[in-house]
Image 1 (cartoon, rainbow, N blue to C red):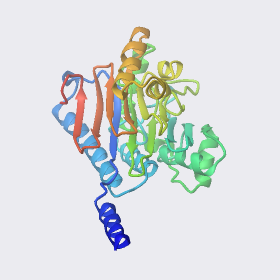
Image 2: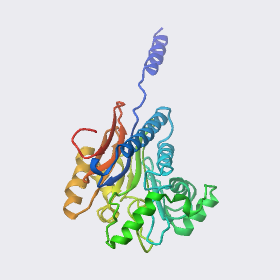
Image 3: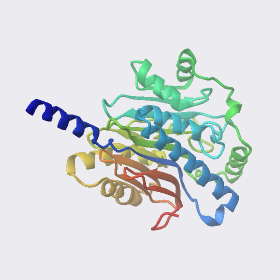
Image 4: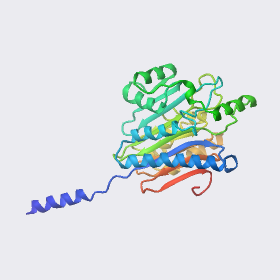
Length: 327
């Protein structure tokens, strides 16, 4: 009789175990993004795109899809949109072509993959995942990255596929100004961080880089520890900003290290790095981050950052501009 009761109690307990929480945060770039320089139509388009990205990703996480797969799927949506500086809609180099970067990292085993300076991969984030899963390497660049992606059966497109009229005008403004800083002062990068049903963290980032970049310049987006980092023992981070600063100060891994080794909250760690470390040095940008408990932080030191999140409680936040409460 005792065994029967124990069995019934065991079954009842199993049946009432709550599902593990999931969470997601997405960014679409940071920089001089204000209401004054954006039309109502543009604002609506960005809000819709960010809402679709975060909602589709959250739904996939709720269905039990792996964090890595969700990161790739959501970033592909943003790469395929002409609104963002990643994939179709990427900025142009000084020579008038596109060089694309992307990276991805798994928090469960610290596996990572990245591509830099790719010119013909339709969705660079897919190539980053392929590098992680199907090669012994972490980062492939240039023609090698393109060749590897083609060998993996990924979609290859002509470089002109990524060009949009908006980016052509941005390059023209940049060249006519003849200054070091692009006329289009947004730091366009897209990124996603997630906590999946298995309790695994994952992060990914994709970008076209900086308008008018030269000499094969590579920013922080494809560099593990700078623009992307994920570790189940701390957090997952995707960054957007002036890449040279994010590389030198290893922004993504620094935030996770502060969480892991000092015990501060995710928000405190992100604030410390973005506001207290970068600002005095002139480093502009921001991050989205998630910790192992499903807490979300979206921190930036610029006028705005396209951002969206759904936390472990299902609370959605959409924002563009810099203000205290979500806009």
